[in-house]
Each structure stands twice: as structure tokens, then as C-alpha cells.
Amino acid sequence: MVLLRFAPSPTGALHLGGLRTALFNHLYARKHGGKWLLRIEDTDAARYVPGSVEGIRQALAWAGLDYDYGPVAGGPNHPYFQSERLDLYQTYAKRLLDLGHAYRCFCSPDKLAMTREKLARMGSNATYDKSCSNLTDEEVSRRVKAGDKHIIRMKDDAAPARITPDDMVFGPLKDAHASLPTDPVLLKSDLFPTYHLASVVDDHEMGITHVVRGEEWLPSLPLHLDLYASLGITPPRFAHLPLLLNPDGSKMSKRKGDVDVLEFMRRGWEPGAILNWLALAGWGVKHDHSDGSSSTSKPAPDSTTIMTLQEMIQEFDLSALTHRRTILEPSKLEYLNKNHLMETWSQPDGLNALANRAIGSIKEAFPDSDRTTLDHVKKVILALQSRITNILEIPKLAPYFFVEPDYGSREAELMIKAIPQVEIVKILTNVVPRLELVDSWSEDELTAILYESSRDLGVSQKTFMTVLRHALSGMKTGPGIAEIMDGLGKDWSVARLRSREIVVDER
Image (tube, rainbow, N blue to C red; front, side):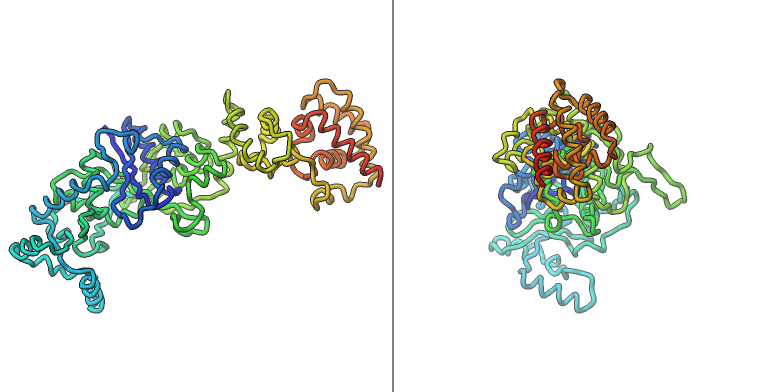
């Protein structure tokens, strides 16, 4: 069975790059009838951030990425926290020692620093002089019994011969041993493993068949493959995902940019739109091969195709991902989010769900308004449906649905500055009586009345609509006039038009 893993470190909030990695694990597992697990790689106690595990789980749940095994969910390969698996790593480290692929290093941190400096001055690319690899078995045994602190290092010149399998995204890879530190550390003096040993051991023990992770781990791949070969175990297949970039071209990370997944949740973005946005970043390319041929999978969606999670699963293809780093464009999220919203309120209970999500921010923005009922909010959403990009932007987008317009704002004053007062009064005095006689207050009925009034008055359509828009909303953009009046209701619409008629007439 195909089994993948998403293995974040609890060093802070889950960011967009991490969510994309989890998403691709989910897509690949579900497409191939497999499963995926959540594993918390918490062996670096110094960088642990309290609450981050709960934040990771909350972000995954919000996005609808349901892992099969892991914290709380349980599963056959528990525990799913690396800090609870230390005995296992020590067992594998001892196996490497016994096989002659690793050795104990007793050098102090100060000595290691001095050695690195010395090697650098000599122009060497080495990071360690391997001095402890020459210790006799008797000397090692004596120092271990004496309780001397030490680490366990990989003996990089003793790894068995092996091949480098093609990456599922990048294809053939060049050997990158030169980028590795000399004799990398596998087990630290506190008996905690480094990432390299722990991830290899856990992926093997948990039966992981495919490792889908970020491009930043490509330089470590030779070491991981050496570990598999040294232990005599078969490695999983690897797929490395090109990094996501901020709009300014910088690397997206927890320390730079607004990339916290839960912050996107708090700001009202649709989880389906976030997944859609992440999935399509760099998806759908043609790859040229060294022999001059080219390959492409079936036509992939472009970067603004509206897709559900199920559609992503059906269409997903790791081999069609770009090899280049991809900028994550906020404007594309806005477009996708707007369309996901439209899809949501077309569902049987979708409008009710959106209104329930929006009502809290509306009540916070307008605490004294008596127009923050669920039914009214639903009418407002329908009136704004072609304009809403984010469900929480309603208070800013259309405050006039909940409170009186600010007629003293510069925007409101400029709207009617060039229209003679006599013309404004003429329009309002003609429209108001007609509206007061309306029994069926509906958008269609209101549209017909407005058309008749405009025709009878003989004023330009632009002037006619601007006067009404000013009186009803005080804002130059928004839904159609009939939509605004339908959302406001008869009493509030007529009252506003009447009040502006009196104010202008008195001037």
C-alpha cells in the first residue's frame, strides 16, 4: 500500500509551504488509494514552540486534509512524536557502529570549532579532520566506560556503493556529496538523533513508500541514501517540491512574510481556495530531456482553474510540477476565493453557513446596529455576491447595509458635486412616491420602476443612478441600485431617499 508522511517540526505555526507539502502528500496518497500520516519531528528541544503541534493539527483540519495516522488519530506505527522514539534511534546508531559505518567522536565543541577554522585557513572544504575515526577499539571502550561525552558520526568514506534513483519531480539528480559536512553527525551527545538518522529510521520503521518533501532537503538526499545503503534497507521513492517564493522573489519562510496558515483562516479565506491556490502554483509544465525529447502529462490546469479537493486528487501528477521556484501571487488567491465563495452559497446550506461565519465580524464592526440578524446578513451576501472576495470584508465593502451612510465623506460629496440640487430633488421626489406604492418589494419589480422613473424624467441614466446611489449608500461603487434597495428593504430604502430629498431641498 502507498504510504506517505507529512513530518513538520513543532518550531512555530504551519506556514503555506508546509501546508502545500501536506496537500501534495494527501493528493498523492488519495489518488493512489493509499494513506498518509502526520509525524512530529520534535528532536530539537531548543527550537520547540509550545502550542505549535495543536496549531499544525488545527490548520490541517481547517484545510480539510485528514491524515490517516498520527497524533490523536493513532495508528499502527505509534508513537508519532520522535521524542518518544529515542530508543529506536539509538538501536540503529549502534547497528551502524557494529557494521563499521559509524564511529564515536569525543571532540569537544571548542575543539570542533578550532578544527573547522584550521581546515578553512588551509583552503579545505572539509568540516572535520576525522581524528576520532582513528581511535582504537580499546580507547573508545575506555572512554565510553569513563562516561566521556561523545557523538556518533557517519563514516562517509565507508558507505556501500549505490545508485541515485530519479527524483519524482526533478528526474535524474547529480551527486551532491560535496555539499555534505564531513562525517555528518547522526546521534548527539544528549542521545537525541539528528534529522538525518531519525527521518531515515522512522520512514523505514513506519513503512513509508514515498517521501514528498521540500526542495530544501535535496542537498541531504545523498546522506539519507547512504544511510539506507549502510543499513541494508530499501529507500522509499523521493519527490522534492520546488520552493514557494514571496511576491518580491524572496524565499517564503516562517520568519519572513505573512505565511501563517491560521492567519489566513482568521482573515476569512476559504480553505478550498487556499488549497486550490497552493496546488496550482507551478503545476502543469513540459519538461525537456537531455536527449532532446520532451514529455508532458495530460494537459494540466492553469494557475486560476477553479478546482475542488476531489478534482485535484483526480488530476494531480507529480511529474508535471515545475522544476523552478514559484511565486505565490496574492491576486490569484483573491480570484480563486471569490469563485469558491460563489460555489459555497450555491450549495443547499451554503448561504446559511457563510452568514454564520460573517455575522461575528459584522457585529464587531457595527455593535449598535439592529441590522445584524442572520436573515439580513444573508440578504446582504446575495446582494454582494458578485463583488465579495472574502466573506469577512463585508463591513468594509458595504457598511450602508447596517448603518446610515456617511454623507459627509469626501467620496460621498464628490459623487453629486457636479449635479444641480434642483435635479437631485426632482429625481428623489419622482422616485419616492413610486416606491411607496410597491407591494412586492423585489429586485425585478424595483428595476422596472426605476426604468420607468428615469424614462419619465428625461434625465441621463448616469445622473439618475448616481443620485440614488448617493442617497442609498454614499459610496460610488457597489451592487446595482435595485439590489441595494432589495437588501435594505422598503422601509429603510424609502426613508433614506426621503431624508436626502429634504436635506437637499432645504439647501
